[in-house]
Length: 557
Image (cartoon, rainbow, N blue to C red):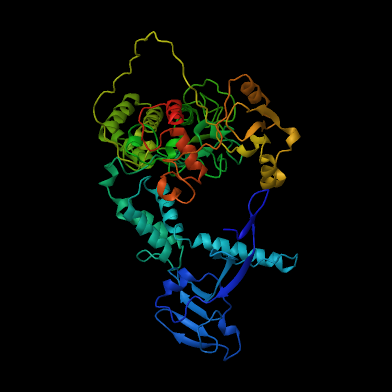
């Protein structure tokens, strides 16, 4: 409407005016009204001279008035839902664009634009305030509740279970546990472990309950339960390196800031069809399953050694079972029980919390008995069988269907020529804005805009590998590729590579004003975007359709 002047480089130059005004003209009726409308903190009124303020009391609100009136200098004292005393100034500051009816809140900033000594102090204050904001954010308690329940009890907690644990985190109390302070972990963990969802034996047989055990925790629990002992002069147990490549995990060796797996991971197969979460399933693939079982079998038969792809730090070698000469540690567990059933029951208690099914227990007892009178050999075969059971690898009570799994048959060839699209998903992060850069563009110089926005991390124009885009409908006749993508440039020049820029997952076309209501996708979380791309059809709108086929259909609309 003419209030602002457009700039050639983009954006507008506007004349503005800053204003400060009061929010409340009278005593607020609730503390929640103060907390939801006031954003600027105030100094403690008790630090001023006596008589500076007069006090009025309301319902959960105390007002400190200057000259007995409600103004922008009034200070309200309330207690928030976390038990913190909050002092907030009855003030709002906003910026008005002159010549228009548009205005917006002026966010407070306490950092000086000058290079003052106080800037370091104020920076620390702002960091502390940011940490407090995150700690006391309404989403923090349920976030922590879900993560802790997933680690200790079940991958798919019920809403009531999450609410109870989140409440314990917020109030700091669960029954007789906790200090009553926000974030008390004694109360939180007590709620996680003592709620009926964690203790119910009925839920143990529910296929929607429980979780898969983490590979590293399985390995450590096995070594501790079976009393692993060092048998060399070394004080530290050295395992195969990198141990993570063998079983999928190792302490302090996770690949990303999201740790070893994602809490929202939904596996393929029947659990995925039921939309069940299974974070640990991300680590379950054939090489890691084989590596874990090889390591456990080798530890049972030959200790921590290089025997038969064991956990030892060296190349695999063949060994005789029961030979521990190449080992740096071995299992020292022994049992005083003479009866086979008693031995297997003790192993079941130690390794699966007694969850071995009657059918599996009977099989293990019979196999143990067949090895007698060699008690050591019998114990080893029982240990191997138990670590092969599903009860050892999960926190569920397993019920066998009794049905024989059908063998997969190879379909007869159709004789039709076959082509496949191979989709490579590269893990990790990529700075896509420096992979494909505007080069020659008109009438708007998009490279200059790119350089201004990216600043010090922008790519120099002279360093880019220029590719022709004149036959496209893009705003640029050419783009520049990162100088280390020479092979990709050659593929593009040969017509064997095409760029999909600004790709993402939307459930429908939208804009920045309506995207929250228009799309189910989490647009600003790259872990979610990666999951959506891997699934190709994350919300199951076009089941059993191909990615390129759906892209072609969309381009033709």
